Image (tube, rainbow, N blue to C red; front, side):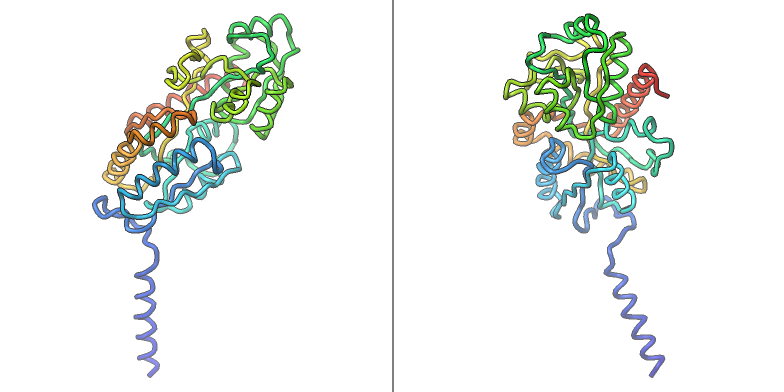
Length: 322
């Protein structure tokens, strides 16, 4: 009887184990076998969040399985990255602006993760990154701002928020040899409010964040840090066109998978994401949100991430960092 119970227990245990979530590699042709989760390092309502939810709807229809968007903001993107890596599952992906992590090696002596474990699948969009000043400030161009700063050394302030954009702006200030004091902010919204009220004279951030204050007539955008002009803002020059190419930083946003994911599955997911992002309905909705829809394959995306890392490291060196 005891042997029969033991055998029955073993059979039940084996049956239960067979129904546990599978974390082994799934053949590309059979994927997905269950819900797909996309983890974001940003909160609801951000440009990247809206992008991801639009793409998730398209991909869910394509894949025949729900695509769940999971917001994990905080901790300098470490919360989201660690959740993604700990899942170690080919049904859990990371959708992120690369600027949330490309500066990590310059900010942290020891990283709690290996950057090589964030494997690019596909580029989705470029976030527009704007350089804004108070509407009340008597400047029309970046060159005007530099001239004003040289006339008033130490009297102007810029909002510094930890990360890639802060390194780029700090490096530019050193490169142009102007004395503008850094006021550190943890909250980008507060920085923008202080910019709009004139407490801060210059700030670099996603255009989507600035847009309400721009439309309210309290902030004006002098240039975009992106390498190309945006169709949605045809009158705003790039920083390179404005004479300061050292400030160039594209707001790359894309999808990442776990290191163990097969190349065949990465290619399949990339092709589906590129198709979804190319949908005219998606483009129409995202363009006003400060997102340039620019889907691309893993190889292109990875090369641009490497270039971004180099640019940030060069800016940090200019700014006096390591």
